[in-house]
View 1: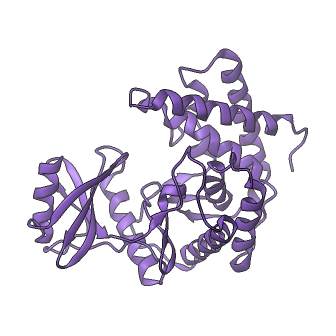
View 2: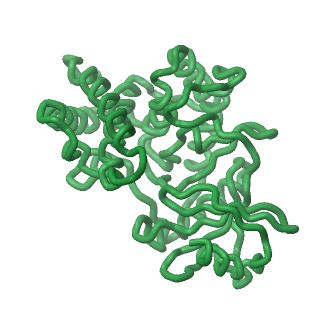
Amino acid sequence: MKDIASRALSLWALKDAVCEFVAGRENQVYRVSSDRGRFALRLRRPGYRSEAELLSETCWLSALFDAGLPVPQPVPTQAGKLLDHVDGHFVDLITWLEGVPLGSSGQPLALDNPEKVFQALGSRMAELHTLCDVWSPPSGFVRCAWDVEGLLGEAPLWGRFWENPTLDAETAALLSRFRDRVRHDLHVNAERLDYGLIHADLVRENVLLGQGGLCMIDFDDGGYGYRLFDLATALVKNLGEPDYPNLKAALLAGYRERRSLDTRLLDLFLAVRAATYVGWIVPRLHESGAEERNTRFIACARQLCSEILDTSETV
């Protein structure tokens, strides 16, 4: 991959820049340092996103950056392209945002003032949603949909979580019942749910604490979806924090400073988000550490989905 990265950099006349590997989950990401500044070079995972989706992401990021949101800015190649390809990999370059991630999944938060941070995160999320609502995507704009079908249909975006091969029969049946229940609830409550473009992956690692406030990175999974799903994604990995109720309240307070939102179904979306990880992990079960993560994902989903099924009626 390093050889591909080196050749990709020549598209931006950066072949002599310092190139360091920093992450390799959905995409291979390299930090590029040069006299022109610092950038992130992304070698996009083959088959994960279409060319139209990737081009749409760069268009979306450019619009958000131009509107003043602190997000990475796509950088065109010497030929003026925001997306190119090298040896079967789509590649793009974005500006590097300085900052420290809020934390790491599975580790306790270590923030000086976590409630203040989560209030700022809620405010930033509301700003994102509002900017997305006033933006008019160009013709050909294509992004995935975290709608009922994308979350709970026959071919969910992150896989058929109720068929994770490591599930025992009882848990598999519970997740199947949960899926049927939530599909019904979302249809019944469709008119009250705020829907539009969302980040969809605002976990701790994708939110940076910088000198200018909070920055959002990694819009790879961004698309159309429920705004409550965005909030649930930011909250679900913090359920084990001792001050979780305060973090949740702070996030909602920050959001409502900028934008109104009906949050009566937030707990339902927390359970939905937890269930998606049970599907997401399936094609990654061979990876190092996957067994422990899978066990953690299933335990969380089982608890939250059980709580939703225990409620006797739709909100």
